[in-house]
Amino acid sequence: MQLRLAAIVAVVVLFFSATSDAHNITSILAKFPEFSTFNHYLTETHLAEDINNRETITVCAVDNSGMSDLLAKHLPISGIKNVLSLHVLLDYFDAKKLHQITNGTALAATMYQATGSAAGSSGFVNITDMKGGKVGFSPKDSSGVIHATFVKSVQAIPYNISVIQISNILPSYEVEAPTPAPSQQNLTAIMSSHGCKVFAETLLANPAEKTYEDAVDGGLTIFCPGDDAMKNFLPKYKNLTAAGKQDLLEFHGMPVYQSLSGLKSSNGLTNSLATDGASKYDFTVQNDGTEVTLKTKLVTAKIIDTIIDEQPLAIFSLNKVLLPEELFKLAPTPAPAPAPEADADAPAPSKKKHKSPPAPAAPSDSPADAPDGDAADQTADGNGSVGYNGGRFVAVILTIWFVFLQL
Image 1 (tube, rainbow, N blue to C red):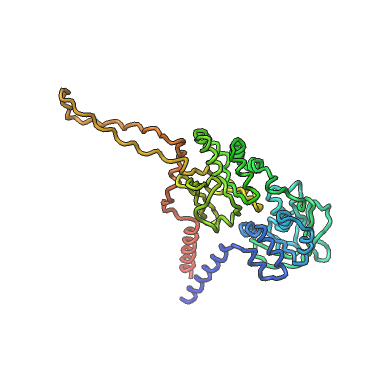
Image 2: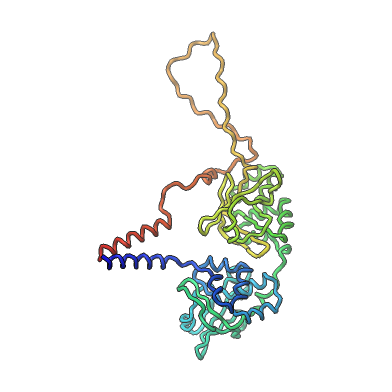
């Protein structure tokens, strides 16, 4: 019996250790004081959040001395973020894999490449297995010159995250080039090139665009509905008054900068650019695991992509248009018409019962009705289906029972 119990416990431990693959780069590096500066700037640039949200990744850490060389260049925080993004490889390389590279060289995409800001091959890093057991690293645009070498493995969680130390910062003229100030960035162009062209064009034709431009230097978060959602909504939008159209567009912006992790940790009612005294125009931020949703009384929209996240500007795309209740109130149910007075000279009504046809619905007097299907967003998911966590639980129980029967 003790043997059976030990086997069951071992199965449970192995199962949960295999499914628990979350990592925290800040906690990993905090155990090594020589990387304190590198760790600090991963947090300051919000790269730590992106690293923690990814799987199968390699962080090429540089010690405090190497970071001093980078800081001596006096780059803005956006430039430092770009440089450090080049040190995060979107693949898993531990010490063993580095020395077993096929044909002696490998080309790895980096987090800088994933931002979409990299020109040409500037977002890639060459890894070369050199003679004498050394491994070299160099940006793809550096003409093959080796700029850093592998020093040691810091920590590895196969095949989730590998943290290694390299000798120097990887230089890149393209990556270190100054980025435009937030106020100089073309907000609508950024949105248009990332699946929110209809929203951007609508914003361009409205005074709300200036509201966005005036807010960006002090901090701005934009939630732009994707093209499909915005196209379906345009007929409703056209029925709004001029003031209503501006309020609707400003409702999709927050007058503060919030990263995705910041939204996850600051659930609750949130002001929008349209919030003005008695006119509430607010929505609720909620998260469920890795998903972040924005809720009004009429619709629940989900963040589906991060378009840009560089303080003081963040732009996220949504799967739906946000509907403020101040503009889209459901039409009240019409009161029943009073029964006509009986006419004494009229013939007596027949005793045979006839079914009356249903009365047609009265037209709404709202400026624009809520889109079809949005009412369903106000209803909690009550279908009783077993979710992902439930599936894991069932798998554990079945595995335990199988082991028990075999012993």
